[in-house]
Amino acid sequence: LEQQKQELVRKQNEFKVTLSQLEDDLLSQLSAADPATILDNLPLIEGLEKTKATSKEIAVQVSQAQVTEIEINTSRELYRPVAAEGSMLFFLIIQLCFIEHMYQYSLESFVSFFYKAIDRTQPTDDLAERCHRLIAMIRMTIFRWVNRGLFEDHKLIFCSMLTFKLFSQSRLSVEEYNASYFNFLLRAPYFVGAENPLEDWLPSKNWG
Image (cartoon, rainbow, N blue to C red; front, side):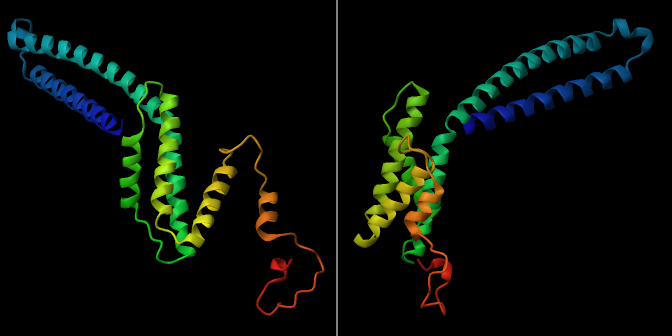
């Protein structure tokens, strides 16, 4: 779709350049023509007819290009959830380096597996179903790629990160995500006035 979009923009620019050149040639011929014999100037008349015909042809092509551009933009928007899934997964896995510094994932490697997932996705003419299958395949492909390179102790952490991320985006169940409940799960309740024996290095707000 992006290649079609770029090709369309290139053609539209060519149309504008061609039309501008024809207008310049026509003005040049008119300025050089003799007013007394302008009606008998066959090259000038033929140039006018050629410019008129070309202008109509370009106008039709521009109109068709505008319709095609709308169709391309509409299709691109329908694939936006797939792009959002890929973006979410990439920015999720690069956070694994906070757990273990050797967990480093380049964008190039991620894109490689992203394309593999697209190639493995079963084709369908239904665009909505196509997006659904793409998201599922991309998610599973990236998960398997990352999971096989993690220490056993860190696999559960990665699963939790992915699960909570999907849950926060309402992709797992009909239950509404509640940020306060999630913070309660991670940090435990905070009791006002509780004595903190480790106040020198642990903030009181982190003491249950």
